[in-house]
Length: 577
Image (cartoon, rainbow, N blue to C red):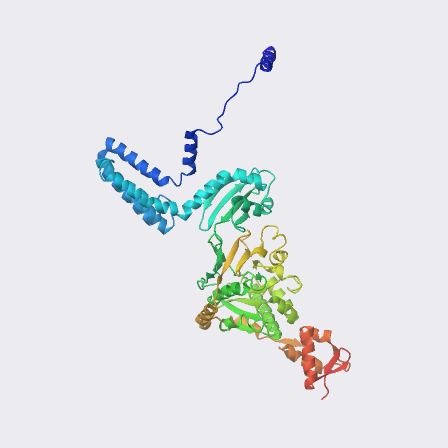
């Protein structure tokens, strides 16, 4: 064996290797075959007509009496297609009409051609005319052309992947949907979705799409796979009119808007604290109005509102709000009453053995809506502690917060743990990339939640249970007329608090043995009882629970009215009678 190997290698050294001559250009047959395969979708009507003609010729020669069965089969298939899209799995009405009509026409022609022969007049002319008539809508149909483009992308993906830095990735499946198409891809070993996210602009360039057309989502079942969505057009380019309230109970999920794949954004709100964040003109008011419009239609929820911008945002809903606070004192009173309601319900549940408060028209849930929470922190610091108490303990008692804020930093949220208690985060457009992590959570920007790229009011990302992928959505547009009509419709049907909760709100604050319910009354009392050397501003802030600027404003007014006097630097007391 070894000697044979040596002789064979010696022969190769002294004799030239045989050459295989390959033509510079492919043969005409191969080129035609490639063209037919490349344009197989466009040629489908012609291929169908040829198949019908050959089938009719075979049936006419072998079973000319089978034409009634052919006619009956075509009628059944056409009826099923028109009614339910079977067997073609078609869901759109216009596509079912096209497929059903084409099936019926093909069945009638095939039955006639089977009986008398496909070459009998006028059957060839009818076949040609029908082919042209059905080919035109086929050639111009958007979804068919989209499927063709997707097929060609799949074929070209290995080359595209090589150029964009994802060599070795492959397309596992692809589906054309309403707005474009989506594909599931498998990455080569060692690559992750994080690598893909950094290459989204390169993917858009490789696919030849418009900027911002590609979305990348992680596959929750496999770390080495991802889902890529390619949008032919922006489905959120225009505003989406609000269809009106879609719920009749707080137990039902609320429709906030529409995702880019035309799926509705459905979200349950019971026992959930909600944080809405975004810059000015990002659409916070629109999302807030959608939520309020739905909650106003629920007979098992009581709404309280806090709007320290003079009621600009919440006053249109005043007829559906059991209470509306527009001053720091009123806001503090509302949140303190919210804690009292929470405590009363918790005490009752501990005695009855119930673990959660079940909302009903007789025992409604309580939702406290706070617009621009940062204003509350600045103007009514005494209310922050109550808000945090509700955030920590309110879920079981169906006492929840809905807070809107432009930039929910730790400082603007009161410096406490309220933000961490918000289980639903809605992030609209932000100005700075880092604000994404402030509203949603740490690491969300890196994970693909690019709220800084949202380009229209009402577009948002949603982070909640069941919504952990970075999917863009757009909230419904609620007009002023919608607000007025909805508020007027449900104003007379709003429920009242249950007797237990209502009684809890009637309790009043007690300071040094005196019953008070208004920080301004408290301020006058402590000034009147102040020692001869007066009280400092920090001491007055402690007694009233109000911010420093509020204290100074009241003191200046009292001095002007002769009700207070400054007895030393920074120390005050009531003016002597």
